[in-house]
Each structure stands twice: as structure tokens, then as C-alpha cells.
Image (tube, rainbow, N blue to C red; front, side, top):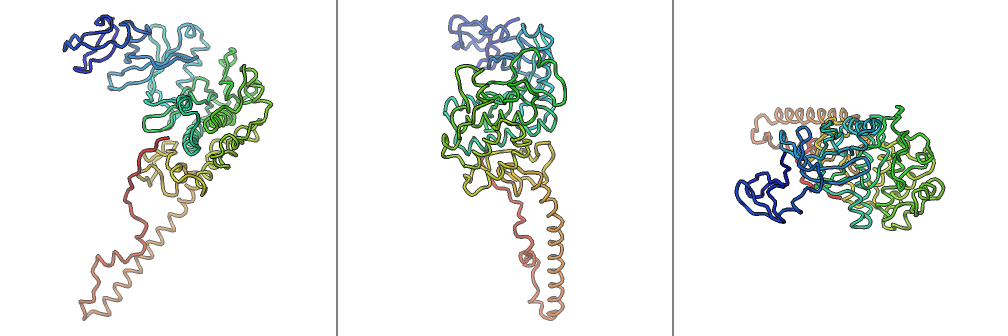
Length: 431
């Protein structure tokens, strides 16, 4: 089978490696002579092959649990990402089960901040997952380029990531490997949590984790995990804290020459004060990060929902940058993190009373309780206006010039103030 290299930019014809001569290649359809991207040989033997309905077109990256490729799904006319388990690992049933568990875990969560899984399969002995292709960079790449993030940007990204973890934890699923490399950005600035390869359903004994493979990354690993103790949702929150400590400070909370030394520091050493490394960060945000990094799980936030409630207060404080609250994007397309339709949805993706891009259950209940009062108030005001009109009309029956035109009655109704449904145009958030 001919291996496809790319599409001709002039006519769209598929180009093959066989058409490349040196650093030049000629399109067999329109005859255009183009520069070949490479030596004319595929850099990876899987490039150009077809897995199911997905044709692999390029290499995106490599990791411990597999290689990620760009692929094209012709039936839907879209590009996707395909993660392929290395053949030497595919021969191990435990690794295959762990790999498939990643797909099942991610597919079980329907959330705008988690990468969507499209399919799982096997082709020529290769185990693969087809998933959403994210067209931006990772937080790790951004930190490598910029060093650290402005604290308000970090807060916006933290809120989106915490919202994703909240949805996963509600399904009983732990991520177990939160780190900058697993937080991706779309071109519109939305966070996508990737790589549920270490995911585990809470309450389920998973023998795969007993193969000796390292669960998590030492720079972000919670103390209880490094000690071999059970992990829970608070373990993900610790890794989240370590990730955003680095994002705000420009360095991880602990660094050493060996992974073992780093793990010992996570278990025994106090976390260096974040405020001293990032004086421009809000003290409340620094306190939230430090609480995430407490050694004992019971001293951290009890859940991602509790963390989000605390971050709402940070975003709503007078000292918070005014634009930070609009950049979190917890709600998208009028749906909350559980996929439910929000009855009142603004153009900027935030509901009325929405603080920091996150609407807590308490706020939602308060809005629900206020609705009957608002409707009854509107009804009473309308009745009052009608009575006044009838009274005035009867009193001045012989003076038709005193009649109030209908359009004036409408403008005099005080209950219509503040109820405009005009949508405001708000630019798409970008971290």
C-alpha cells in the first residue's frame, strides 16, 4: 500500500512517498512540483497506514503509554488524534487492559474540558484510541516558553481544570497524573484535560496498578501515592496544586537530582511560600494552592466542588483582575458540567450571577428560589397598571385626549427594567 505523505496544496490530491525525489516531489494529478517535507522516507512506519477508518498522516508526540499520531477520518471529514500502544506493551495483557481503561474512563465523562474519545480498536496487532484533536499547545509548552503565567491567567486555567476533575470525580474516576503536559489548550483558549492512562475508578480494585509501573509523575505526586497508600479525589487535588504552584511561581514546589529525592520532599518538606515567589499573586489564591499541597489528604479541600467554591471567592474579590472572571469558561453552549441545559444563557457563556466562570450549586438554588418571587412581583405590577388605566379611563371618559396610548403604558411599567434579553458581544477567552 502506498504511504501518503500529504495533500497537494494546489489540487488536494494525495501525495505519496514514491513521488518524492530528493527534496522534491511532483503531484501526479496537476503536475505541481513541491518541496518534500523530509527525505522522502517516512519518519515512522505507521504514517500512511490505515487503522479502521482512520488514516495516519503524521506524528504528534510520544509518551510512556504510547505514541500519538494525527489521523484523518474520511467518513466525517475531520482530523483526529490516535494514540497507539507500543507493540512490546501490546503483548502484555495488563498493559492492554490499562490502555483500554483509559478510553473507557475518558468516554464516561461528558465535559467540555476533557478530551472526547471517539473510538477504540485494534489493527495489525496495534491497540489504538481515536480521540479529539486539540489544535493548541500544552501548559508545559507554554511554561517552557514563558516561564510562568500571570496569576489571573493561572486562576482561569485552574478553574477549568478543577471543573473537569469535578465531573470526573462525580463519575467515580480519578485521573492520577495531573501535570502541565496533560493540560492542553484549544486555539480558542479552552482547557482540555488529556491522558487518562492512569485513571482508576474509585472503589474498584485494579490489578493493573500492581505491575510496578510508576503511577504519576514525581514532581506532582501526592505523598500518599508515593507511600503506596490508597488514592482518592484529594490525591488529584494535590497534583493540581503542584501543577499550578509551578504555573504561578515558575518552578515546581520541590526539585531534586533524583525522582526518589523529590518524592521524599513531597512527603517531608514544607512547601516554600508561594507568595514570596509570586508577589503579584492574590494572597487568597496562594492560600488555596497551599491548602491543595497539604501533606495529609484530610487537610486539603474535600472535593473539587469545594475547591471551586473557594476559587469563586478569589475571583469575586475586589482585588481580583476584572477580566479574570470571564476567562474560566466552565459553562459552554448553555450547558453545565453535567451537560444540562442552562435556562438563561448569555452570549459570553456565563449565566446571570455567575462569578469567575463557575456557578456553584448554592448559587443555582438561590436563583431557583428567587424566580417565583420575581414572577409574582411582575404579575402584581401588571395588575396595578391595568387598574390605574381603567380608573383613569373611567374618570376622564369625556376627555378622550387624556387617554394614555398603549405604547406609553408599556414604558411606564417599572417591572420591565433590567429584564432586557439583549445579548452582549464578549470576545472569546484566551489564557
